[in-house]
Image (cartoon, rainbow over all chains, first blue to last red):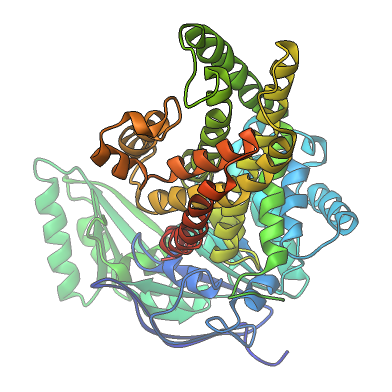
Length: 312
Length: 264
């Protein structure tokens, strides 16, 4: 049990000429919730598909739970739980039967499967929907059922790919609860997400990746502190008339003041020691519609590191 | 976990059971075609068209087409399951990917597909055999020999596996579900008519006969015909050999080529 949950050395994945994951070194200890963040196409899903031993690695080495994924894929898959991005429940089966059928692949008996399924449906609040067919469940219910399915084999490591994408706020909180409950039992979680609040809330440690490489790694608060500091100020202007030029002026002044900035759409976000000075200079600029002082978040780190250009 | 050439029998069985469970849940609709189709064919072609035909290949027309529709149903059973139905599972439902995230491997999933598709050939053959015997009983004709009736579900296994393998090869390539219309129109439907199913091959010009003897359904029909008549097994031997040679090739290529649709 002393081996890390994940140990990747020079992990690489090619799709033809495209390098999706480029020589990643990563070690994730057991018992924490680890986040993989990055823009679309950064290589998050490719990376976790290799970690769940469902996509062969092109180079380097990868051990999950101390086990080589290439030679012992079955063993790895029997000990992890996988919660995919898409809904791939069996639409012809009821909620509970989805879990029972899934349990067969882990060699569980009917009785074991039924007991476990009953328990998990209770945990995710779907007991009353146990005999409902999948098309009759809401998006949030399906997601919770997929999480329950991923827990059927009592995994040592749970891998979630964008677990709350497309869910309403209530449903997101329920899924977070499930993740936190699982985390409390001392097991390891690996998740990918686009939502920075989600990562800040759930992850003990995380890595931001782009173009198949790790840009930074660390606990959320440390990353925020080290990359952008604790404070941020947003300058909002209209995108037409003089607004754009006002943003240009703020940007060049920020450079003079040795501040970091991120520019997205109608705003500039500035970080650093002298942001108060920058704010006082432009607060009364008639082209600037709003100046917002706030605490720096993980989103600021993300924007700083992965640039402002539109993806895909 | 016990493996044969990297395939786990326990996992294949679990995949097969999943498909069987779906089938059982919709059994009413699944039983209709293999029972009513042969009755329709026997009535319409056998007795309807057959009324104008003295004999066909030495027997009455209804006796001639009984083994043909059995061979056709074996082909359709496996081929449909390994193309349209498999594509729905793979593309629309994500079933293959869901299973491949468990200890089951992509190869287990695909071998499970082959066995399940073959099961459809066997169930089709069984239900049709019963339906044909019942029709024969009603009109007081023996449309199938007793030994043939027993053997039909058994020969459906290699015939089904061969067509299932072909189906998976097409599924490995198809960009969309509509694309399956192309092999169905260019390959399956012509075979349906031209494989010595509705008239004997010796009516054809010699060159066309050679082509017909290359078609897998021709050989499936020659086998079911020998079984149905209870005679002429010697002539069916080359056909059996043809099926047993093509079957493993199609299965191996089907699994190998479809693998890339699960893992990349």
